[in-house]
Image 1 (cartoon, rainbow, N blue to C red):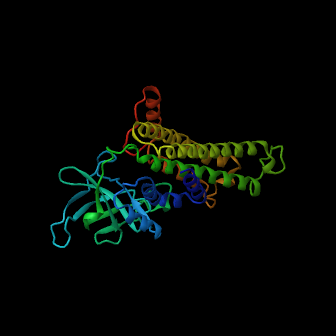
Image 2: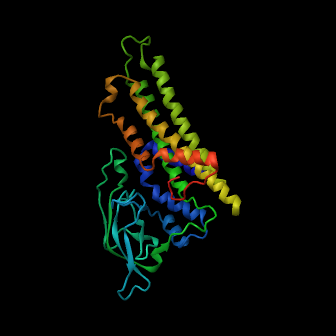
Image 3: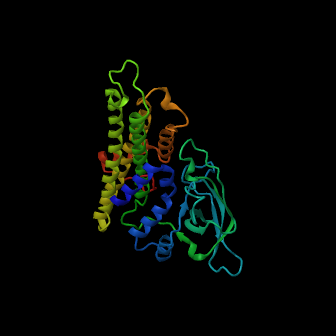
Length: 337
């Protein structure tokens, strides 16, 4: 898990859009790697080995609370699809949707039971829109996926019930992944700040240095950025080890370690987000007005970090960690921690 997290940081350091667009594929791979009881595991593994990419989301813009499901699933009455279903609805924030081969989402039946489904993106009735309009992460293709009477085979729909799992915090790796993206953004901010100070910046007129790379305040600023990038990467790798430590446990020991790992990931999210945002802000203290030129695009670091941070509020992460440390209250299993 540490190796995977470090790889995600490296990808995000090169381009945080690419890292996030691949998130659903990494989450799918993690499910295969960590759950021997995963429905249709062999089929999913074969798709991964063939290089298929996955997109997925449960998010909707229906006016309800985040996480509510209004996409509907009803039995397919047409002949030729025994046990099949038809799904209708609209999903937003379909990260990597325009790049993917498969789309995974959630839908509910008439009695309110929530199921997961996976469908090829070229299936009749699947419509992908390039309408993502956030200030950052613009190339993640996290737009709308519309489902118009999409027919699903019986083996493309599975019940979602984490209550019987020994470690029900399946969202821990998903949240660790976002923290790794933040760590990569902080590292990218460091790369740009150091490069600009070394190659482009001019010392301010009352500086004691003849070149910016020797200005003590420029050095201090780059050092501050480096410290933020280091902190973000460190907490991500520590949290990855905490998740890894749950792998071979069973029973009460597994649940206790899973709760601890989930809280560790929540704490990691707080630090990674704040480190990336601060690193991205400090880039502009390395030089004067020229560093704000739009052609450089250095504002993308803050915009990207801010957009990733808004996936799940860090205030909730901190509050959950605080409750756990004070009372031992387990974190929610809703996937946000």
